[in-house]
Length: 329
Image 1 (cartoon, rainbow, N blue to C red):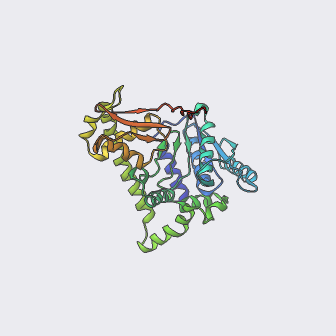
Image 2 (image 1 turned 180 degrees about the vertical axis):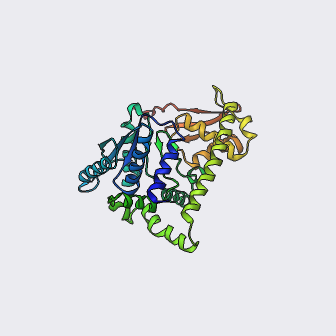
Image 3 (image 1 turned 90 degrees about the horizontal axis):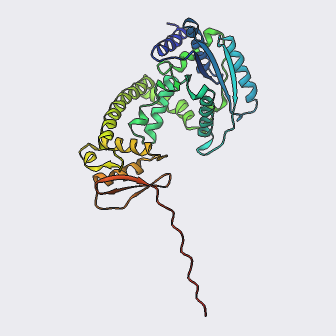
């Protein structure tokens, strides 16, 4: 099977598994992955009477970025996409330029959807999935992170997680399209670039090939396990929950892996943000290692505490400083 046929088949199979809206959006950078995805989406959509819309995000981080965006818009129109729209964003915020650009890009893509609802296809490939798993391993992340990217996590769709970067390049060659080469993708200052250029090739050499595919399979297996455990955790949360917090007796009977999943879902659902493993384990200690200790402070100025056999969350009232005592002579 040719590379182009493989990309088209991946898109066809993905769209057959989801409830596709009348207009399918495709995020396009101008690189090989997104151009191949855009062409395949337009090809499949024509046979399903769907419209296609390309969304090109101009981050404004490089000289000539507006011209690159305009060229990408023109390229996808030539490849059969019905409409192409350029979204200009301002990149700022914490986490470094890579994380800030990703945040700005996803926000712009979501805001481009009517009411925030719809489907945006992203060009992440099997190689991207392998890099994501390696990043999670290097950072000591848990199975949720190691399970990688989901094929469908509304409104995002990733049809190419079983397609290699080599295949998307081959598809572009078959189409006679010259993809844009993002200089950031060769900049060793970025961790993902070094994984791509140095770590994965070394692993492929040492382990005699097939590493990227093996990492992607590992992600899929962990994702299945994670989703199964999350389903069980939801049932436990329903049993333990109540207006006064979580029933500790219900949680004490569960294994640590399930108990922490319940606590994680409860905390996130209650408004705790930027929850770390240290936060989660400290709250879990209120159940598993209870010795009358005080509450646990959490992001968002919240406190998890245990009282009368239940865990609860509260937002402590700010204390008013006592003015210094003055004495007259």
